[in-house]
Length: 120
Length: 110
Image (cartoon, rainbow over all chains, first blue to last red; front, side, top):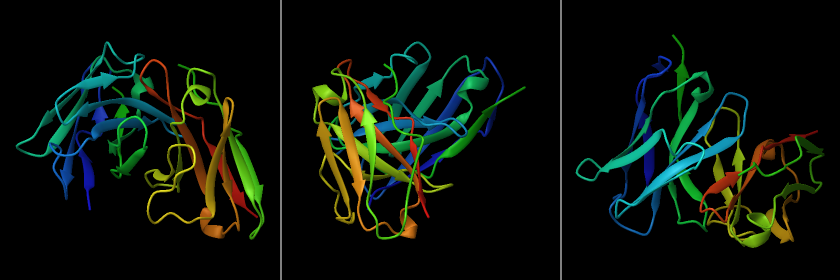
């Protein structure tokens, strides 16, 4: 079955760019009618949807993060990535990558998540 | 887009049934049958347990059921078990083509 694994720095300085990669195994990010998504969870808080990239490369982002976020993919490596610019302490969170079944059928499966702290 | 409203906590005894509500507006929960529910155990990633308001993914127990009335969706867990303890989140598609989550509900099995 499809599995996802996040990777990237666990500490980012304020005003810098947060960059994470999600490696997908057990299935191709180029096949199927899925969206490949990022979701985050601040410590002790709820979930926030960040955005997705589709198998055709179309992206869609949470309007609250639109000016700072970019999601891209590398099909040769079966990976997709998140970049979040101009980070502040408010961006400290566990970041999850996941497969989204369009807009209607939920998000499943999820990666295990990776904690990114924003601190000098 | 504001987060959907869930109770902060609910509790029940083993064998009982509990219901968690998820209230939105006509531009999200009330406007579409695209509500999902997730279960999250401490330190783990969320797991999809309900999609399209009331559908269960393969392998999810039929003790979990979902429904919706107007702007409020509900998750019911019957025959409560100790392993059901954790956090539960609802989510909905919205009219501005995003997904919005609820604030989460902590379920305690007494």
